[in-house]
Amino acid sequence: MRCYLAVPENDGYGADTLIALNRGNHDFRGNAVKRLGEVMMPRLASERKLRDIALDRNFAIRMGEIALIGLDTGEDKPDNHPANGGMSQFTAYRKAQALWLKDQFERREIADAPYIVAFTHIPILEVWPGANPGTLLEDYAAWQKECAELWGPILTEHGVQLVLSGHLHCYKYHPAAEGRSWATIIGGGPGRNFQTLVEGKVDDGSLLVRVHNTDEGVVVAEHRFPPRSVS
Image 1 (cartoon, rainbow, N blue to C red):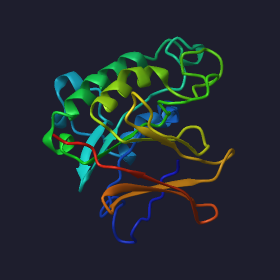
Image 2 (spheres, rainbow, N blue to C red; image 1 turned 30 degrees about the vertical axis):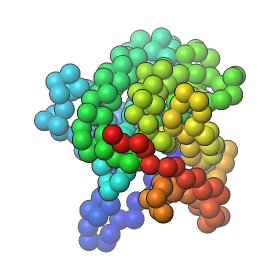
Image 3 (tube, rainbow, N blue to C red; image 1 turned 90 degrees about the horizontal axis):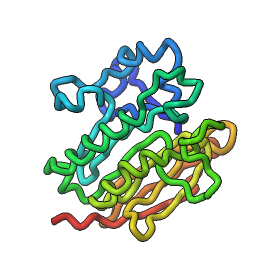
């Protein structure tokens, strides 16, 4: 998915509208990786437990009736892939995020939210059996099975309604199913599909999510999600 920034002439980006960075696999490659903090400041160390000190890009924030949770799927190849040169430790990174994720639901502002939307760059669900689950040395991940196994049950336990992802450059929608509370929307992009903008708001007692084809200026899908049962 592409992020569109409308920068005011005399103001910085993010001055009036929240901008939260959800890293993708390409954000771990190349020399520019070291300078990411100059573009988008990471969360302060004082905001995190010592256990979570490496998780400087995860976020869990409340905006009105909606809680937003950002999870980092990391690279689209397993740690033992030759392209990583033996330097990757994304399995440990994903496990650390599972511990962090559990803690977020102990925060009242997250636990009490009627609607919760999680964000991952690489999808954590794919229904096609032949899709690369991120554990193979051939090609790249179409979805991230390891993240699905670590995070998916936690999201379902707390009734999260939606996971928004990108990566595939192709719009897809997978509804919630038995044993899984959350649906998945995957954004489109260059090369395979239309540019996608996903808009969400609380409307008439439910979370209304519209998927826009920004190339043609049309809405291609609308999805509604009922509020969670909050005890």
